[in-house]
Length: 229
Ligand SMILES: [Fe+2]
Image (cartoon, rainbow, N blue to C red):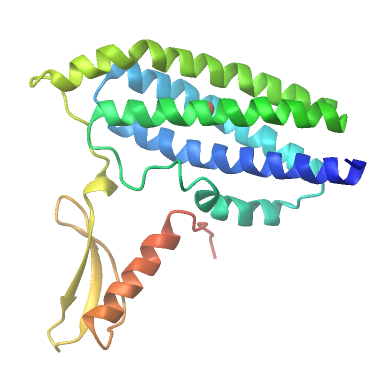
């Protein structure tokens, strides 16, 4: 393999690690809010802080390989697609499923960083190697912590008096497609307490079009940037 090929391969591995970290951030934030087990929430909380650091470190390594911040942002938005096979489409409805998802995800990160170590070493990129080793050690630690919690989480899921998954507000929210007073189709986002948190602002020719517009918003809202004008 030529030096150029190795560099290209290294950037590919870094991009995958970056996509995983972006996904991990979203999953951990949901986990902190929804897990019905305090020890599990604690693991998620601690690892969220670590993951923010991992995301920063990997972004820096990508930037050092001439990937611009704007390109990174674009990558982050595609991140969901890269790891789509791993990320659960729906928010888990039990703490057990949440723990299983986290356990699987940490092992995917471990695999990714173990391979990144090999590629960084072969490419002679000492800084990336050190970063990958450091992150790998933390991923292994958190996987070990989750490993130790699985049985008690399963017991908790069996206990009818134990708290269920505390659904995040967004998990219970609904996009409602409806006809307005003039008989035109619109959509609105209704939170679990019945409050309207967003609306289509315009009407559509059919329910089908309104639904498609709502789907478009749903797809892009999670990664949309908030800017001040
Ligand atoms: Fe992780």
